[in-house]
Image 1 (cartoon, rainbow, N blue to C red):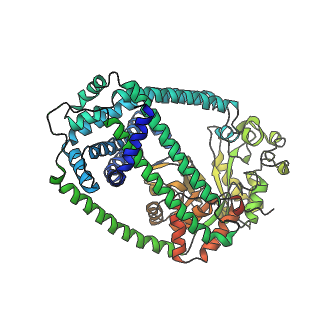
Image 2 (cartoon, one colour):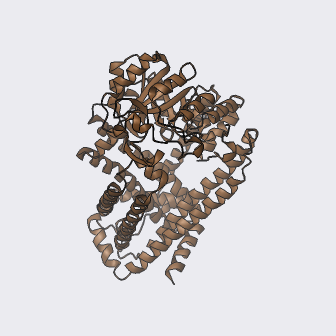
Image 3 (tube, rainbow, N blue to C red):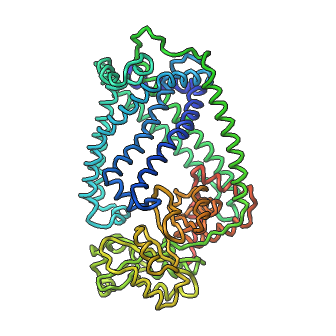
Amino acid sequence: MTSFSAVTKAYRDAWARRRIFVPIYVAVRLLLVALIAPGVAITVNLAVSLSNQTALTDQAIAAFVLSPAGFISAIVVLSLFLLAEVFVFAVMAGSLRMGESDPWRAGSAAIGLIISRLPNLFGFAVRFVLRVLLLVLPFALVSAVIAWWTLTEYDINYYLTFHPPSFWVAVVLIGVVLLAMAWVLIRRLSAWALSLHLVLFEGVHPAHAFNISDTRMEGKRGRLKIELAIWLILRLAISSAIAWMAGVLFSVVPLQGADNLRLALIYSLVIAGIWSLAGLVLAATALGALAVLLDGFFEIRTSEPPHPEPGSLRMPLFAVVGAAVAAVLIGLWFGQHLLARIQAPDRAEVIGHRGAAALRPENTMAAVLKAIEDGADWVEIDVQESADDVVIVAHDSDFMKLAGVNLKVWDATMEDLADIDIGSWFDPEFADERTPTLRQVLEAAKGKSKVIIELKYYGHDVDLENRVAAIVEEMAMQDDIATMSLKYPAVQKMKSIRPDWRAGVLAATAIGDLTGLEGDFIAVNAAMATPGLVRSVHAAGKDIYVWTVNDPLQMSAMASLGVDGLITDRPAMANEVLRIRAEMGPAERLLLWMATTFGMTVDTQAMRDESP
């Protein structure tokens, strides 16, 4: 039998056992989430306790991870997730040898086997994770050096937006490193292929399992490496085919106007549900196929029974049934509270991100005026200091993305800025746009919209906080502005020099309790927003804003969560979504929330605000 035939047969065998593999896969994944969550929480709490804050955000996380304690904590968290993968595969491999056609009995016996081998299985999993991490670490370090060498001359946003030659050099070099890493991993994993089986079915001590597996796989590793590569290619091909089919179906969603939004949502939700179910079945089937492949290389060489008798294992089954009942009860409770939240009136304000950055070049007067015209409650801008001590509006550390000019913001004078066109990159129509000052933005917004001023730091600031405060007070707009920053000490400084002003913490990532940080609001990446976070922020008497929300379904979902502000590149669209939501009943709002939970997006060209 050829390697390709062996792999396709493994997939067919796994598909034939889908009634066993899929329920076991889902049940074990849910169980492991419940089990590893406390471990992750303990590690995170330990990490935060080593600082003098209740939470660590972006820059603080980066600094912490680079410290010895932080590096160890990051490895522990990563290891917990890798351990979970080992246990999932162990249950799948165990169920394969049960010889049972009933998923409950096969799953019960497999869990019983895992429990009986738990100490040794845990020891194996720890050793396996450490071996994999030691193999991956050198390649990760080399990739980091390549990225530093090729992608640090200019602001990272320039590389991500325009993909210059150095970007592709980095992609190719890092790609080669990753291919080399994949080859090394496949080579070692093929030698360790039987180690888990030896621990599970022969009672071999974890310390010896890897060497014994290496010996037994002698002469077979080449074939297994080929089969593993084919298995992965087929897995990716099937996944791509499913995504392509879903994309085709999504492309015919009727989105010619806001009037069709309800019909589009129902149609799209059905597609998303089928897509999610197909992905789940594929994940379980592919893992089952891998178990079938590896099982074909294993022959038991001990007189010990390979597994407990399925019929004698009642307790795990009762435990699973009990967990299922508990999950249903929790789901009903959660559903009631969710519906109550969806029935609540929206309170979200619309915040124009860098003005109306989807329709005008970001952080320009054109973008600011467009956001005001589109009814934004707030206009959000980024500020830095120029070389001649003027507070200007700029996000990146240089002007490469906006103008192709290799000039750092802190080295630029107002005379320099007068010659730099920051609008043509977006559209030649905006060739006259120049970097505005904070004063110009405040003058344009006064009496029309409030302004959120994000303080940007690249290590060259002089007195940014005091200069911003002076300009705001000169304009008499203390009640119409708020400040925020990714740099938490800057938030603390603003609260110390102007305690009555609104100031907030901006976080793309965070660990710990965000509500314990100083500030009047929290601005988080939309992916971080959960019902629990929203409740805790509100309970602490603070507001929560989410960014950058440009998809109408996601806008609606965030409003359903009860966030206080939508930071968006499309203020007009956000206002329209909130208007449509106001006309919807609870069931329709629930549908909107569920659609986004399935990962749907419907931000098509037809729905974008194209007003002049």
